[in-house]
Length: 346
Image (tube, rainbow, N blue to C red; front, side, top):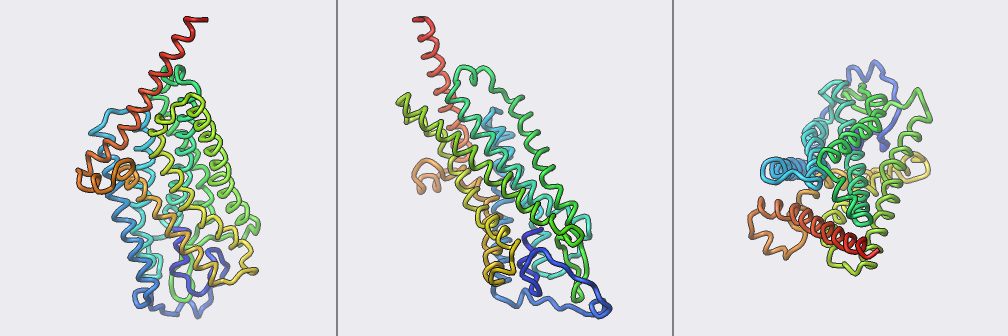
């Protein structure tokens, strides 16, 4: 995947670079050294852990949402997030193999495709979080309308549109990702050599559409929600938003370092390469970790940790997601009845 190259490209600190293959490179035999280095082995271990936790955890969320819970708007949101993270984790073995072998053996198509999957995950996750935040805001501001108009069919349509937009935003990975030979090995890299401004445009567009704009929308939505709840003196009704708030905070904490160091890398000549490399490695690990944090948050949000740990994992995940739907439904019903009484007095 695109940002995983930092783990294996020792000859250059940038995840984007230029090279000209030579005859010497064609006969040069590369001996992988990753498994002999503590840092590289540690990174592989972290990635394997992320793969196992994310793959199993998100598969569990998908299974519970599909077979053990009633299909609602809320479960539609959460299962869509879980599918996004599950697909990302399913492709991590390609990156793990690349790190260990220091040689891309899967061909040009998979080089492009695996990188695209990573950014489809990023964009689909943040777009869905924006949609959920707007859904919560509308439910609080217009409870009667929301109770009548919020349907699973409409939610599913919105999810499809969010995924299509995420795929469109991920097309640069399919366009610029390429494979080549360097020092006797095949590498998967970003080939911006023919269009110098493309790298800045791609990095900037990802930062704006995948971080800044969603952050602004989510902050505005939650500000409205908080003000509305305080005005109605219904602070206790904020309980349904705990899981969603944790998911949003986790996403931005996990992805902010990656975006920051990618932007710094655009002017890599002004910074210490070791700092950029370390920062991108940390940012990469945090970004990948976000894919297994979501199912963990479903389980351990709310009650005391020990009680949740001792209880059945399946039932805790089901209760954590169902609790939000029940509480939100009570809030909508209560608000609907209040509005109904108010209309009879007018």
